[in-house]
View 1 (tube, helix red, strand yellow):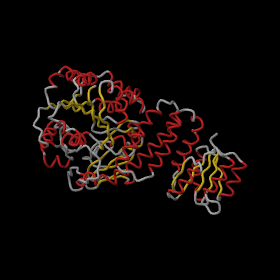
View 2: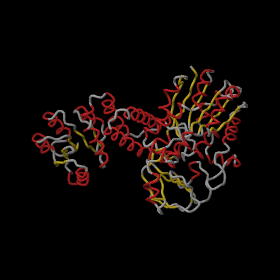
View 3: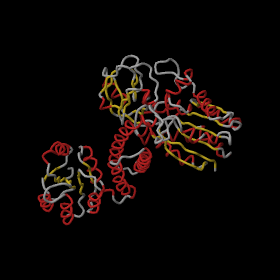
View 4: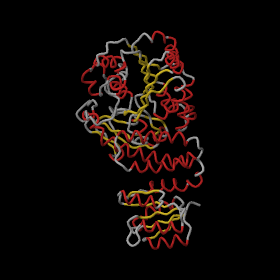
Amino acid sequence: MEARILWADDEIDLLKPHILFLEQKGYQVETSNNGRDAIEIAKNSHFDIIFLDENMPGYTGLETLAFIKENNPTVPVIMITKSEEEHIMEEAIGGQISDYLIKPVNPNQILLSLKKNLQTKALVSQKNTSDYQMEFRQIGMRLNDRLDFDEWTEVYQKLVNWELKLENSGDTGMQEVFEMQKRDANTQFCRFVEDNYEDWVSGSSDAPLMSHNILEKRVMDSVGKEPVFLIVIDNLRFDQWKILQPLISEYFTIESEELFYSILPTATHYARNALFAGLMPSDIERKFPHLWLNENDEGGKNMKERDLFETNLKRHGKDVKMSYNKVIKLDYARKMVEKFNDLLKNDINVLVYNFVDMLSHARTEMEVIKELADDESAYRSLTKTWFEHSPLKELLQKIAEKKVKTFLTTDHGTIRVDHAVKIIGDRATNTNLRYKVGRNLDYNYKEVAEFENPEKIKLPKENMSSKFVFATENNFFAYPNNFNHYANYYKDTFQHGGISLEEVIIPFVTLKGK
């Protein structure tokens, strides 16, 4: 049997849908429309958790809280308030509330708070879990603030660090709580990006480091002064980097680890070309039309990365000797190790490793890979196993021995998708599951992030009515015809191109051999 809940609110009749939702989940809910009755009910019956409206006539929520705690000091109390005034929150926290929610609340927020607080009892003796209880509340409170881009990177770092800690706890309940918090964070992050992205790419000084300026800000100063390696691991998420970090730290000192923002779409065609060119896609198309292909042009869309990087070096006055190598096959990776002494003769060596990208695609197409990487933890583990046995690890050891400055980064991340949303497009619409570009796109605008004028977000505009539409959170696009088949086929696969913490906020690491 699920827990017993007491819910006191002077507008309790308006909360009937929420109460029915909880009862369908198996909870027993008793209600009161005032603080005085709530105190008496709490005296005479046992409850596992209590919800209190802060602004009730008669006894306020804070007064009711004080009386309840006199008789039931250990019962968790969740304060629900319309006000975010600091003194009210301080009084409530001082009165030992377990959590607070800001009105209007939705059923998932309530369920999230229930799961987090009711599972505390069983896990209070475990340090990681108890630490997460405290951090959970702090993260939740921060998500209610108006975060800037730096603060979002801090939140994402905290989420990834807790994800890695909690996956070893073996407690599926707490992991479920974490997943709900991460989804909540992603929901709000997607709105944040949609609201601010146009300003960032229009040249605003108040913008994060992004794909098109990260090399200028972090790499160019070193080029020509000392040999440099720039290693780009396609699709490398921040959590995957954190799994690789201990292995790489055996040979390198990590001089800096920071996060930057991938441009949109978070796809190789756009993000990696922007990374190497040091320009947004529309600027590449305008300045170097022979180096850019649009969605409907024939040919590989990332075949000119070396040329784009050379234009970037020249623009920064770097007349240097460089090499560019895209590593797709194992034999070529081994060749890079064999050619190491030759690479040292260059001022800068760029190596692009496509394994993680291939892993994400293979997981979609191959049943055996799906079984080996059936969740986030296994996906990270498979990335670690690849690295431990890859020629890249051997190459990095050689670089570290020579104490050559090395930058390790990526072009974008991926997200595990689990919910299909319908979209309709004509034959010219691209096939990516996380973004669509074209004419006559039809969709529910509440389920997507839309940019009707590509030029305003520095993307090529193939025709007058083209627009970009991005999947957000854990969603992916599917066409109405044969919808159920594709919804099931792509569910729980790793995709990129849209807007999510995992795709947008990505690592840039500076290494120096020990």
